[in-house]
Amino acid sequence: MSTIEQQANRWVVREKNGPLDEGERAALDAWRGSDVRHQGAYLRALAIHAALEDAVAGEAAPAANDHAAAPRRPGRRAALWYGAMAASLAVAVGAGMFMAQPRPVTYATVTGEFRRVPLGDHSVAHINSGSQIIVTLTEGERHVELVRGEAWFDVAKDKSRPFVVAAGNARARAVGTSFSVARRPDGADILVTEGVVEAWRQDGEGAAKVVLAAGDSARVPARAGQMTVAREPEEVARKLAWRDGKMVFRNQTLTTAVAEFNRYSRKPIVVADSALAGRTLVGRYKVDDPELFARDVAAYLRVPVSITHEKIILGDVRLLDGAAEPGNNKEAGKQKN
Image 1 (cartoon, rainbow, N blue to C red):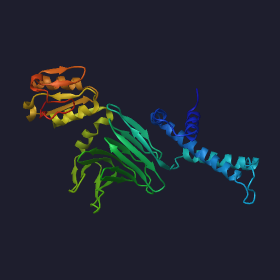
Image 2 (cartoon, rainbow, N blue to C red; image 1 turned 120 degrees about the horizontal axis):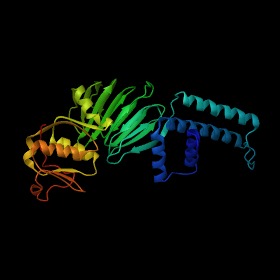
Image 3 (tube, rainbow, N blue to C red; image 1 turned 180 degrees about the vertical axis):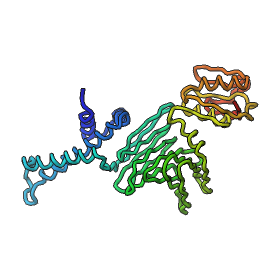
Image 4 (cartoon, rainbow, N blue to C red; image 1 turned 90 degrees about the vertical axis):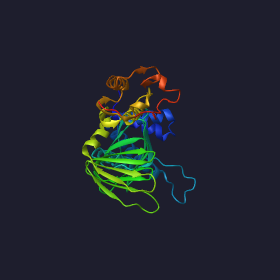
């Protein structure tokens, strides 16, 4: 069985032989994200190959007046020196040296999938279902674009390289802390679980910035409008229960609960009866068990529940009238356990 270092070396060699196709890129991302040691080994392999390439290029350069000179192989002394340099780079990376990743790296999840991705700066991104991030690490900044969905970041401390997350017009910046950003059609939500985060809206006029501490949340509107900030530690913890595969409701509307379940399940819940609109929910469920949730709701409300291969229907199916599409729960209302 090959060692992690050998696997990392093979990946780097493969990348240097030409662009990876979609399947290979997905396999590399999966390998890097499956174990924190894989990310470190990959970065060490990159450093070693870069050092060796520089060494060979330096030795192979012909003299200015030797137009036809063939490339020279590095001498024994140079090879030893460059080998020592590469080994030193590997040790430095293993000890925690920051490695720049000027080329953007994309990580994505499908419906029902969660990913824990170690980044090159020793931060970790926890990516929620149906989400996508693009990570670019440079010497001056660690930049993450949240293309869609939600991610929680455990940021490694590095005051010289701020960690910035962009979600549409919303921006969140930290140095060493933990926070999440969720992109919505009308803006973005920022939740802080540790440390301090600076949030603002990026626009032509330069919106005012706010400082958020652990337990704070902020809604950053996509267009003109004031950011709203709240101090709600319990609500922050509730909204981030997905990291543990859970969904928690404390008087949330049925509309909200169904929308959350539909984010994780390929079998959507449809609410047939608009008469349920005045109820709210209290409960704790696994994100991958929408059928249990639907049965509990049906039992409490004393309404029927129909489960098919395609969807889960709450309420009398005759009330649908063909208007409700899977995942479109406009008839949903409020409910309480």
